[in-house]
Length: 220
Image (spheres, rainbow, N blue to C red):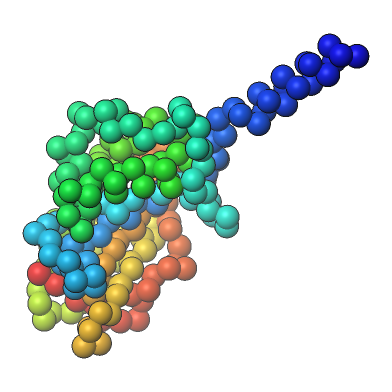
């Protein structure tokens, strides 16, 4: 009887303390426009291209996975991404200041990256985000459609969406806008969605398109 209890105890401990990585159904890549961020949050940034806010494993219905593992094996290790740090500083900077980059990357990894650990380790996760962002090249995509950052010019929501679809196909992106002052609607983020491998675009849906129905400014 005692041996049965010991076996049961070992199984229970193994179950409780094994790494528990979440499943997810797709990725959402969120890219932010620094001049809009500057106006919204009152910080000074010299970035003039879209930068990564995050690569978020998602489900088609809530709950969305977050903080999926606190095990030692899932801990953030800056040494793991040493080879990417220069590129991350360009593509995934903390817009509140470069000195906060490590904190930003660690927060995004803990909250979101750990939820993709079944498919992507830490280096792979950050590499994936950079790769998607640079292949997408939203700024050039918009400029090809005649949509350029300007202090006063505004654009129709559908024109911005169509410019993005020209690259990703007939899949709905999400636009996130803010209105920090003077009733001017600023494009803060563009979000695109991809399959669980981050390889194929899919529709994000319209649920969070806060820009819809507005004339949108993309400040310089």
